[in-house]
Amino acid sequence: MANETLARRYAVAVFQLAEQAGRVEKVGNDLSAIGRAVGEDASTREFFVSPIVDRADKEKAITNAFNGRVDEIAMHTALLLVRKRREVILDDVVTEYRKLELAARGMEPLTVITARDLPENELRSLVDRLERVYSKKFDVSVRRDPSLIGGVRVVMGDRRIDGTVAGRLEELSRTLFAQQ
Image (cartoon, rainbow, N blue to C red; front, side, top):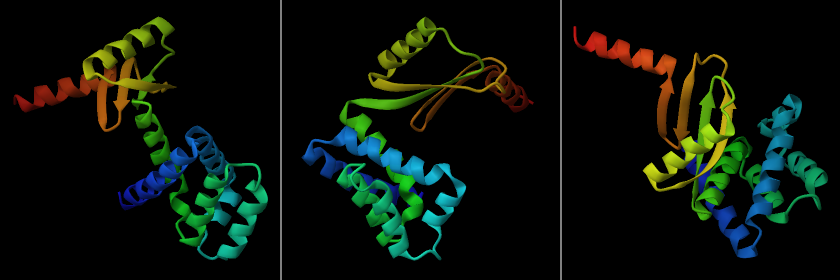
């Protein structure tokens, strides 16, 4: 929770700078690219988040890897996190930045989790209905989870709608035990 709050503060500041510069999408993409580059390889991630590694070495590595390849706001954000010994929250900063980016476009993230791939018309129908019910626009991502027996689970921020078979069975079980 503390990391999320701290990451939100950094993300808001970076977002405001990017907005003033008119490069919101570019900065977001470049922050994500830095986060992926740092997090994909275990040894790179260990180097980046290790408190033992000298900050100057980390700054030099970031500068060598990204200078001229990413937006300066994104690069300086990564450097600032290193200088403040907050490298571990880079992924959280990227996540919070993306939320701000969606909110600026009047959208919210929506994750649809299914046991099998949904046909496009069913997915569109589900999203349209949710947009009408909640009076919001959604940025939709779809994930498959073969462990689900069937049905759909929808995650909207801190809301969760569980329409899976397992979810329904669990709800039925709670109802039956509550009546005893």
